[in-house]
Length: 475
Image 1 (cartoon, rainbow, N blue to C red):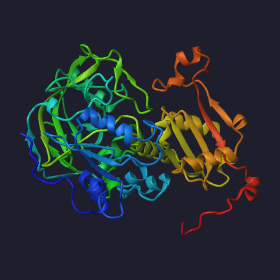
Image 2 (tube, one colour; image 1 turned 90 degrees about the vertical axis):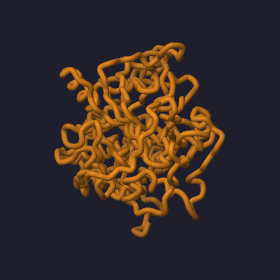
Image 3 (spheres, helix red, strand yellow; image 1 turned 180 degrees about the vertical axis):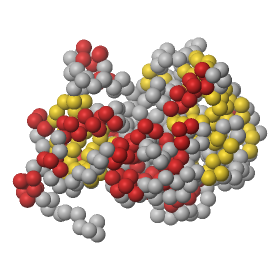
Image 4 (cartoon, helix red, strand yellow; image 1 turned 60 degrees about the horizontal axis):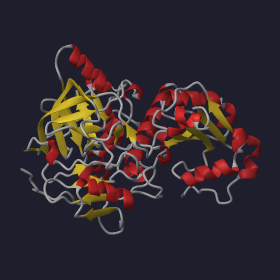
């Protein structure tokens, strides 16, 4: 039975509460002086809600629409309501994270200190064990079926035993999900270890997680300093520990929904029955996805939720997923460079939404650094850490990386693209990027490669390229 026991939105909260509780984050979008950041809509099924969001609210790469996405709550006739767009603004997401807000990424990682999770109390109540009764949407009519798109899968609770990551999960029936995982994922390794011993891997699927957890989960475990795991990183970003609770597997009690279950050794094709062949939900670059290897199967044993909880989802492409991937990727890159002593000449880094938060990297260099560094070598180093990086744009530190227009201005007036763009050869193509495929090359396109652009001013010309209205210390 579904319970609507308490209102979802709470009064204004402190920033670190918004980092640790999605409800406080959502509440911060309401109120005087914040028009257009939050909408409530009725009369849309889950599938229709995704179509409406794409048509009227979604930004790049989903639709060619500038600006931020609002959070939209789609009221459902029965069961929980559906939330889209909450993270559809990178600056908004940063503002909820005390560990990031207002600072360039090198400063962020230098100040981070691990903040371990604490045992938390839970107000979760049990729901009917029926995944098909929850408003998981088909993002497009071509999808293989309804998908969990904002489910953060967790096993273990700390250190090397912890795996925490987001995955697309296809709803197979009332109790089963098919989960897609890259071979490099820590969760997959934990599952294979458990299966080799003859048992399933206990996991929790957390939906509506604290914002700090969403960003920390997008930071690869391999790039974390030894003192960190993803939950202690989430605490560092939030400025306070996140809460943990224990059932069959640990879970996050401040998640609005939790699916408690086991990652089994069963597999299933991503296209079943009369579902479209070879198609999955849209990928982060704005194109339809393609079904890969067979999915592992999660068996759900129990579903719990907070009173009045809503079900969070996202389109796949769009500002929402790009914001999470951008911040997680920039954190991973900065942490890795810091560990190697390579941050000293970098003023800031950012992955842009135009590349889905992964393919397009902006790097602001400190004054004079471009001529002291081997940018070709640095580009290879950056792509080695973040292998989805396709294009790197180096700019001076007077360029605002949060402004795509400012980066384009630097590319237009501070370089000559035909001479200042350089290839990064001998790297594998990016499967999700159409321009990296064999068909593109056969149709007359170029062979797959990566590239970097030097849009910095030579040191001897600094006086000729001062901005007429430089930024003042007061901003």
